[in-house]
View 1 (cartoon, one colour):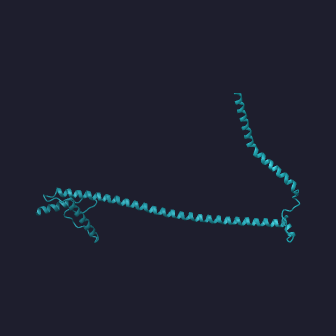
View 2 (spheres, rainbow, N blue to C red):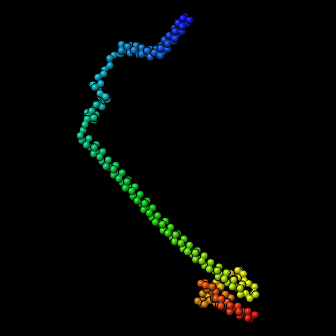
View 3 (cartoon, rainbow, N blue to C red):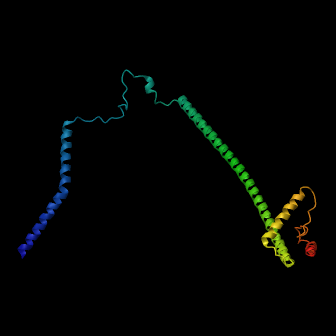
Length: 229
């Protein structure tokens, strides 16, 4: 039992050593190789010149060596003033262009608003005309309904009286009464063209749209007809 326990401990220790070597071994190897490479390079390469201030950043060829190139980077007050003036002029021109564009947009918006107001007023006028026309049509409809109702009442009255005073004759129906009314209206319009009075009606009496027909003349006419018969 003790031998088996020692064997297990030895196996676990060996596994731990292998795992540590697998994790730590590659970084150590690469660090060691870099150290060896740097040591060999320092032994073969000459020392570097690190005085960067003495070396110019741009080397100009000898044929193009001119004082104007070396003086370009120097501060010139006249050139600086000119550049500032040019920059101010450019800014003022840009502002003027922006202002002109804004004014143009404002004018377009005003014109569009004016056109919209004109169209609105025109539509309002058309709507008022439509409303007045509808009111006129409604009044005409009410008047026509009232006239139709009055004509129906007159027709009913004439038909009832014709049936009551028929003296044994065949009573007139609604169709014949309506035909007489239409004929009477036609004659009334015809005689009005010549500014003459309405012709006497032996059956219904004088036509009056404001009231019932003249029953006395109707009775006289029917009495004469019955006496003659």
